[in-house]
Length: 144
Image 1 (cartoon, rainbow, N blue to C red):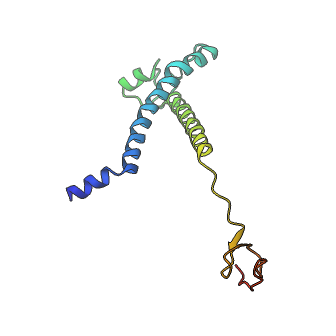
Image 2 (image 1 turned 90 degrees about the vertical axis):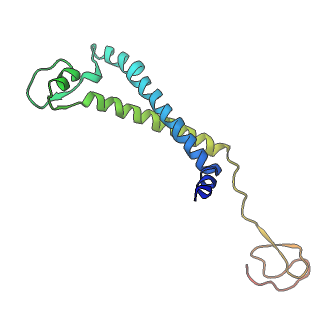
Image 3 (image 1 turned 45 degrees about the vertical axis):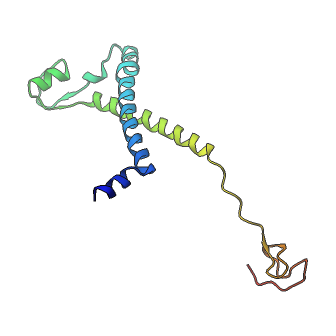
C-alpha cells in the first residue's frame, strides 16, 4: 500500500496540483497584502480618511471606535469593511487567473482540422469525403 501511495504521489499531475495549491496560497497572501496595505489606504484617503478595515455595524448598540475594540468588549458586529476587502481580494485573484488561463489557451496549438479526404479502398489515393466514386480508379465508394 505504501508503494502504491508513493507511485500515486509521484505522478506528474499530482505533483503539479500540489505545487499549484502551494503557489496559489502564497499568491493569495500577496493579493491580501496588496489590497489591505496598498490599494485600500489611498482609496480610504480619497474618501475622507476612511479605514475600510474598521467599517462595521455594532449589533449590541454600543459605541466602539474600532472593530478590535468591539471584539474585545465581546460585541456582536457585522464587519462589512473587512468583507469589502475580501471581495476585492477575490476579484483581483479571479482576474489574474482569467488572464493566466487566457494566455495558456493562446499558447496551446490549435487542434488539427478534420480531414477533408479519405483514401480510396481500391487504389489508396485520396478522394473527397462526400465522393461516391473514386476520381482516379472510378470505383464505387461507400458513403463516409
